[in-house]
Amino acid sequence: MPDRDERKKISGRPDGRVSEELDILILKTASRLFGEQGYAATSVEQIAAVAQVGKQTIYRRHPSKESLFKTVISELGKSFLVAATPSDTMVSSDPLLTLRKTMRMLLDLVLSPETLSLSRTFIAEGWRFPDLVNHAGAHIFDPLEELTCRLMTAVSDVGLLKESCDLKETSRLFSGLCLEHPHQQMLFGRDVLMTAKERDDFLENAWTAFMTGILRAPVSRPATVKEV
Image (cartoon, rainbow, N blue to C red; front, side, top):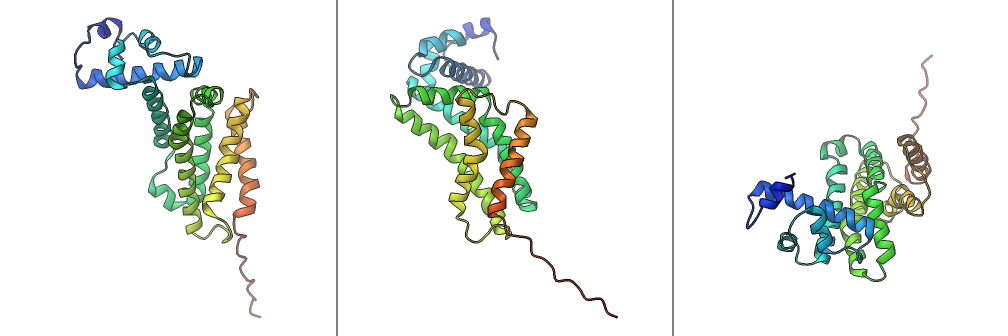
């Protein structure tokens, strides 16, 4: 990240490396201020001042505050998928274990301070800016449900799920139990799942309760009769 003197020297069109560093700086600063102050109370001028960049530097990248906020949300959603999406090899080798590991990783991501602060912004100001809430749903929550559904489908493909399971609905309910419920509890100010052990225990209980209802019972092998 360029220091203050370097940022002051930047004018015109910076080279690729500096431009990328500026992009990251602007988005991180915007994400923090939107989360701390809310959408309406945060201006592009404030973001520029805190990031120590020119206002036009931001406007060259994001034509409006709304565009900047949407980019913050889109990048947060992308970071979730990059961090949590397992490789095809992992999925094919053990889809059930991969699903469990992925949900545990996503639990940490949805309970991160950055995610919680932005979610509070949605709750407080969603009624005034419904388009921003819809954008968050399309770029954060929907992709997470789609990832869960893809992994649940892999579990089904190897014959581990009951035939009565609707994959899309089952995935949505499972994601809601493992991710949305603890996320909402944290938003309500309840100090739950603060430690890694608390999150491990929660996921263990949620996993056991949910999977009991959707997994096929193990096929028992007929006992062999010993020859006399």
